[in-house]
Image (cartoon, rainbow, N blue to C red):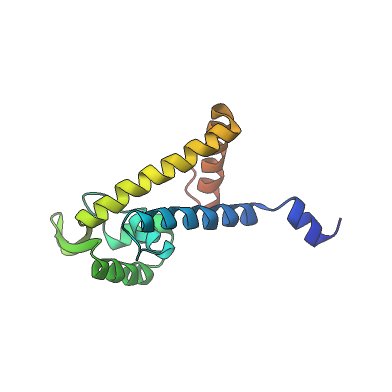
Length: 151
């Protein structure tokens, strides 16, 4: 079997992960646009997907998302301009800043959770609940091992 044919018929982990991520982002951000968040882009997920409701430090967002702190800073600037987050002094360390979601940011976070839950429910129905639960467990294990987060 030729390499190109094998890649089409038996895609590797990178191809499957990429295809899944891009398709998921496309569906998520299209739904968010329909629900009042048309200016968000998939790149903003590096902040919004990892942001705690009570706020997060930029260094923590960088570590969780795998992005450089400078990239996170640029994304936070964009999201601040769009009204999704604000910077506040960290009560635990006045030298540090917390990135805190605004009301608009909290709305986006709640809507994203609902949209993603519906997507997962759709896949669980198609695969069967038990098989989907096994897939998620194994995929989490692979993701943790690949990113060096496995114990």
